[in-house]
Image (cartoon, one colour):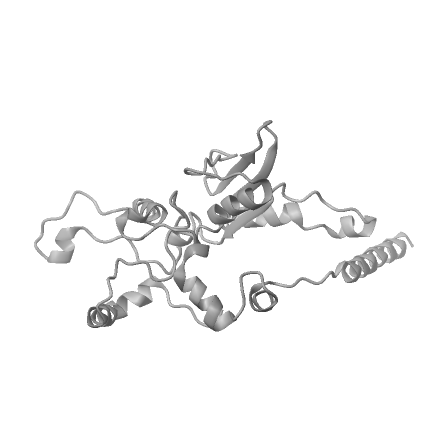
Length: 253
């Protein structure tokens, strides 16, 4: 990322944006590029898991997931790690997705996936984290709780200068919960629809990508490519083990 404009910076130019909207005749409540991922909601962190879960269930297993996803929290004291599963007709688990928010959960997730130097030396591998898909966000509670977001508003009295304030100001958690509800359910201000039904996305693929979703050109532009560096890692681990053995031999003498 070369540049990032956060909500607190954007607040400084809101007046100019509002003037531009008024001049263009556009409705600020219309969906421009992204709305909720589905009629069941998307969420304040982009709704990637929600959309991929429904899409995978449909394409891989022919199951149309309707209604809100039923998340489970494996550890009661860690609400930033949530799981959702897709069950088959016989009760078997077909898909297992998770949301891992905050650096603590990210670190734990990476530890489950990443092999240690000992694993590499022995040629063994780990079973992974046990999930088919993990939505990771660095901010606890997701993007709506990010450091660049606007703080909770002060009591109305402080804003208007009339000296009449409500009993207490809105807390950060209350603000995040309120925003999450608006992003997830639309709050009547956006038209919920899946991303692949967005006319703006179709226009971008037609005019800029010049190829369909999943086409060779789209893959070249959007898909991350990975290289197997297992041999390099094994060689590095072998060198470390050999150095440790030599050190022990030297210390024995």
